[in-house]
Every structure is written in C-alpha cells, then in structure tokens.
Length: 239
Ligand SMILES: [Zn+2]
Image (tube, rainbow, N blue to C red; front, side, top):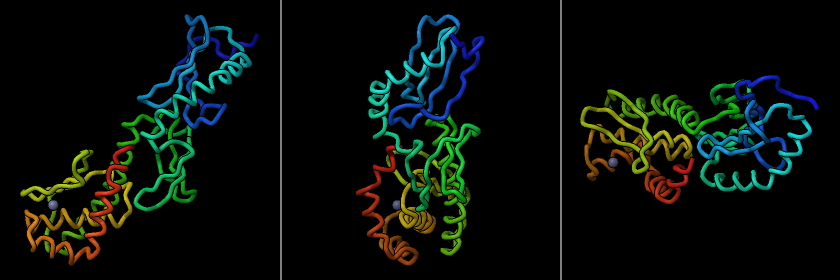
C-alpha cells in the first residue's frame, strides 16, 4: 500500500473533481483519526472535501471517487441553477465574455483579458466572488457615473456599491449615490441607463417630467432599458 500523506496536513488543493462531469474543486483532507474515506460537499463554499484515513492508497482514492460520481453530480445539479460563475462556464462582465477557469495559484479571482478568462481560486467562496465583482463594478461604474454627473453639471460626493435585492441604485440629498454591484453582470447599456437615472436625481430628487427629460437627454433608449431590467433583472440576483 502506498500512503500518499505521511501525517495530517492542511487541506491540499486540487483543481477540479477528477471524474464525471463536475466542475467543482476537490480538497484532500488527510485525517489520522478517520476510519474510512468519506466525501462531503459544502453547499456554502461550493467545493468537495475528501477525508482520507491513514494508509490509504491512491488507487483506493480513485476507486472511491469514481463510485461517488453519481452522488457528486446530484449535489452539483442542485446548486448549478443558483450559482453560475463556476469553472467551465462563461460569464459576461460589463458585456465582455470571460470563460471561467480554475487557477490553483490564485487566492482571489482575477480577469485575464489576453486569454479572456476569469481565473478562479480552487477555494472560491461566494463572499470572495461577490467582493471581486463589487470591486470590478466600482472600477467600471465610478468613473462612468462621475462623467455623466459632470456632463449634467453636477458633482457626486461618493459612490458606494451594495447588494440590495430591491433596487439598482439610489441617490441621497447629500449627493451620495449607491449602485447595485450586480449591474456588472448586465449589458453595459443597461448599467449606463441606471447610472444616468441616479445621476439625474442629483438635479431632480423625484420622478417628475423634468427628471425624465434629463434622463432622455443622456440616455434616449431609457424606456427599452428599463423594460430589460424589469424582465431580466432578477436573473442578475441569482449569482
Ligand atoms: Zn429614480
């Protein structure tokens, strides 16, 4: 028998589940007190953990994992509708398509424009993903909305990014604007409309005719784009 781990070691990362049609990371967790191999799936963090007892051979592990494939695929099928950013899928950020790949060297997600990939760490938590998308949203939208505001003759005090399920943006009397970072997942024209809408509130703190005239000046297709948000907006909340 060939023991692949001498002592209890911290989680050893593996890129993806090696068998079946499963694009989720698998962690090896040697445990000196474990009596047998066991596999669990973390629905919160979306990876598999394989607990390995002492003196387990590689071929035993392979055999066990192969046997677990139907169970593992079932676990994955239950989350795949909820979370779309996983290795192997394509995601559009601000209209640009990126293919998601696992990059075990990374601690945080990153975009590679050269290869048009979104590189995900083996252990990607939902919070890690959300923090990353929030930062990207700020990179794209803060300069955009500041420019729109200045064309309207206004200045924004602060732009913040939230994850509210109920609104895409808001504007306060103190000239602070809050945007939903999930707009990064929407077509750029839609996100642009939301920026125009909130920037227009710097001048008109209401939805009066003057307000809509100002929106129309800066975003002539606003009616179509509002409709897009009403029809498709909830799909952006599923990640
Ligand atoms: Zn409004």
